[in-house]
Amino acid sequence: MAKTKFCQGLSDISDSYMGFLIDQWGVLHDGHKAYEGVIESLKELQGRKKTVIILSNSSLRADETKKVLKKMGIGPSLYTHIVTSGELAWQGLKQQEDGVFERIGSKCFMFGRKAHECFFDGLDIECVDDISLADFIMIAGADERYPTPQDYEPILREATRKRLKALCANPDSKSLIGTNYLMGPGLMARRYQDFGGVVAYIGKPHKPIFQHCIKLLQARDLYPGDSVVIGDTMAHDIMGGHLAGMDTCLIRNGIHAGAFKNAHNPAETDKALNILMAQYNNTRPTFLLRSLKWGKALPDRKHKKRKL
Image 1 (cartoon, rainbow, N blue to C red):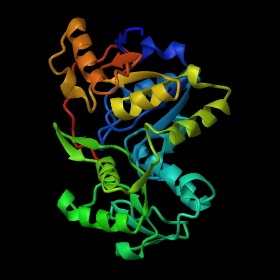
Image 2 (cartoon, rainbow, N blue to C red; image 1 turned 120 degrees about the horizontal axis):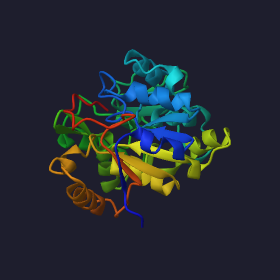
Image 3 (cartoon, rainbow, N blue to C red; image 1 turned 30 degrees about the vertical axis):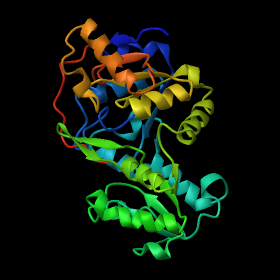
Image 4 (cartoon, rainbow, N blue to C red; image 1 turned 180 degrees about the vertical axis):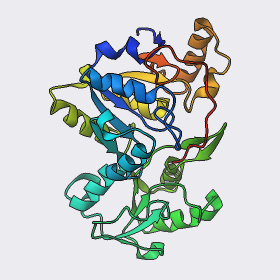
């Protein structure tokens, strides 16, 4: 297996690909504003006629994500498509034609309801507060009603007894707040599986969301070999891109910043990367980039609040 190439900036790899699948959190922005160099990088890609897909494990729909990005200065002229796990979940629930969505039902118990209360707009689905009335579960995000496992586990146990299928519209297991980590909905979904429940994961690194992106690329005569996945998580971006047959680029200043905190030269960086890879089936990113800058990146930045 070829060694990971350590890049100074996105310009080092831009000529090798026509398709760019780019994660949001930890790559484009911190939840409040775009990182330095991001807008310039996206402008450079657009100037070179690249296809840019913003690919996110967000429970928000694509239009809502578009509004969020625009407030940060990342307007629609800077990318080609937005693909979120929330959008795929909404479309699947709308059609209920095949796969995990077929005849899933019309009554949903939702974790993360307050932050995503508009999710069911346009759907013939009722959001219920009593798990005994539900046909299925939606795990969309952290839920302030159930801050600890002790709070939500009784509901999951009851859902298991009812054999309710769960949709996880955001498979992230954790998110970054400063230098601390917050439990993500993916952990709640895995806890449901521990109890014997059935979970369908909609986002990265699972195949459906990448298959959707591949269809968008093929519509522009592009294929996995023409594309690179850029993200800050090994579990979702790098492993997902690898399984989809795409080259990958890990942003080291994101969720795994701590793994590289003592890496100040190529030898130390290579050692830190190998230790990190060992936790993820030795999946190796094709490239390593400090942050999404066009040219040489500046030293590590401090992270601000990262939400789900």
